[in-house]
Amino acid sequence: MDNLALFLNSDNILFGIPGSKLATVMLIILITLISRRLFSHIIMSYLKKLASKSETTLDDSLLEIAEKPLGLLILLAGIILCRMILIPYINPEIDKTIYKLLQFFFVVIICWSVHQSAEIITTFFQKFTRRTKTELDDLLLPYVAKTIKIAAIMIILVKSAEVFLGMTAAALIGLLGGMGITLGLVFRDIIACWFGCSIIYIDNLFREGDWVQLNDGKLIDATVEHIGVRSTIFRNFDNTVSIVPNSDISVAIIKNWSKMFKRRVKYSFKIDGVTSEKMEQLLAGIRNILENSDNVHQEFHMVNFRELDGNSRIIRLYYFTKTTVWKEHELVREKINLAIIKLFEDSGVERLAYTIVDLSDDRPHDFEVSRQQ
Image (cartoon, rainbow, N blue to C red; front, side):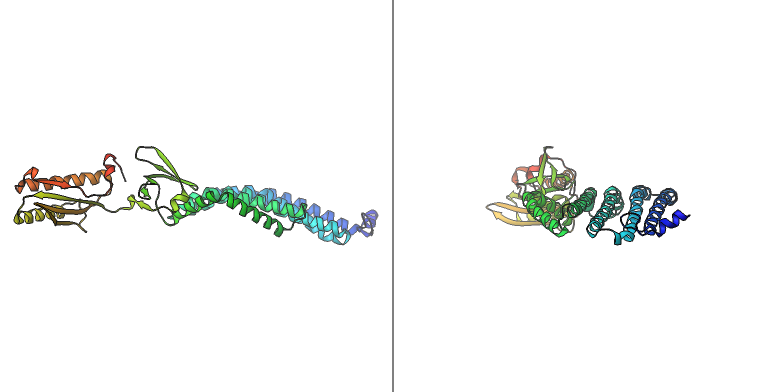
């Protein structure tokens, strides 16, 4: 006991530090180590048992990742308390270095925790993205974890440069900003493609499975197979694949055929040697065919005696089918055409007395393609 009292009352045990201060520091270190062990074996074990009873495994994973960083934070807190007690006895320059190192280790522990939990954070947000109508968040979600990890590493690098190289954070961020501008110029095409991807989803230009035409078919005329961050893959009618950068798509004129809610039919009959009375009967008959067809959209259709061409009479036919599926659309046209031919035959119009002038611009070159839209 006398030795202990002598130790505590001594004014210079080590580097001018009093015995009472050293004893306090040793006690804090002991309490810190015990607290860390208790935290690991009692508190964390209890929390893990509670987490195991929940339906989700997200809390289990977070506790597993947080255990070591929290233990290190307890240890770091003990060291910080020791420093605060010993500040009057430490050289200011050495204390400044110790302070920076403690800051550095604190940042490393936090960033390490964030880096390790990036995948879990992504899984957490995935539940919310499934509820949203837009697909942009689903596409970008896999990149969230990578972005979080890169951000954590960048923060550690900035802090390392500040502590070990003497660079200020502002100077380093300015340097990285200059590098960012340079890299932005180098990778401007890739960045433009990323923004193009955002435009596709934000403006709802098209989705996978849609049949689209870019620049009136000069750039692309195919089905969207996959929308990527950098480019979009199209499946052509001959079953080949075209890959178009999203930057080109963002500035293209886009016609999305899959967004049609009805499909147009437009052509004309050219009939020779028909009286005005017979023409009125034919017009009324064709209108009746369209009006009584369940496959014709009744919102708008026209049958008109449009013009004369010598001894020929030209009837303009214009209507929409309810279906937009190409094959079904063709079957409806066929059924209407057969009904019109029968009308002509029943009205006494000879088969060779008329011809059909097809004025349709509704993609005639796709007659050979059977599509399901």
